[in-house]
Image (cartoon, rainbow, N blue to C red):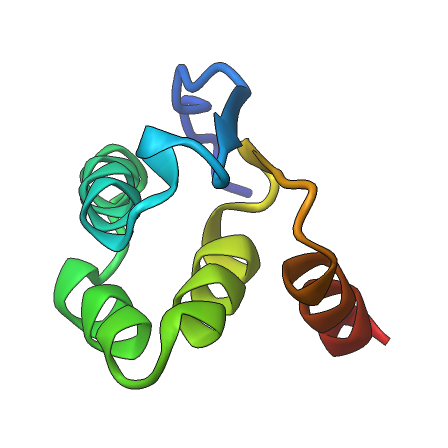
Length: 86
């Protein structure tokens, strides 16, 4: 059995329709989470950059959805992210 200290990460909300929804901000948040969670920063950021903005949102959600709630009124974003979960 092993025991680890749970990272002290509070849930956060990001309005991706506002200024914090740009790809640079989301990658900076991802970089911070990678460091706190000891994840492979290079791999995750490369995945985020590998395609368009919708892909960036999906990769972000897949990796950090347990800590971050992405908020939007954009139906294209909502439809895409919800369809990817089914």
